[in-house]
Image 1: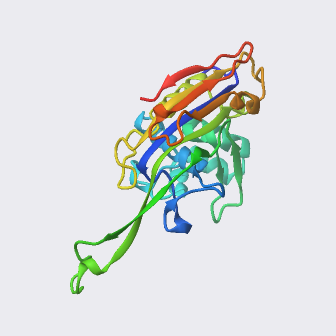
Image 2: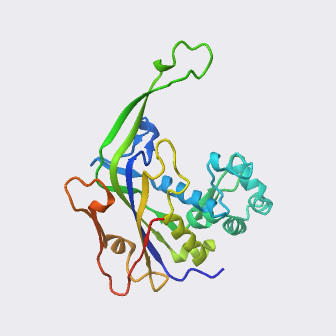
Length: 281
């Protein structure tokens, strides 16, 4: 594979309607909000969805959720030990060799990096990945609806009445979220991240919510509206990522927006750097 020679910045605009995009387990799984009342989706959640899309594209992934484990391994330790060259390198404390093997074996490792530090091992191997993802925040404050739910059937025999068991379910009525990211060429060279890998990341972003439906996120309730992809003409980039990200503006056209069409999405021009714009799939 060839080296990545062009820095890349990107931004993704997402709409949420009657869904819980990212529940907070410390707050009863209520949708995450910041102190301004704007909705939030953590960077960890976004990376999980990108990894899922990588799997759907039949790419090798190291960090798999339990419900998507397709290799029979129940832990990261088991998956790492099953790669004998990697296990031998870790045992010999050959850090550079272990990094090379892990990055060559799994796409998510050479994309996002990974820490290989398991109980009982003397070696601790940290890999910095070139792909960085920001948390997503909604453009406006979101309204969160709470629904009380009951069980219609007993979980175990002998229970008196199923409907006595109460619970809560939350949803964001509507919101448009934006998140940003970058791909660093210097770190890409160290992990072996290639232009072909960057294309997989781009495709993952445009199809982020494919095969992602659940009770909290019904099919069609979350949608990628647009992906902005800035490809610089050099390894270090013509502009800083912060300056590039600031060129994107998402503004409501009405006081009470109800759909993504109620927002105006514009990009300020930067000399010599035009974004490629992709519609969500």
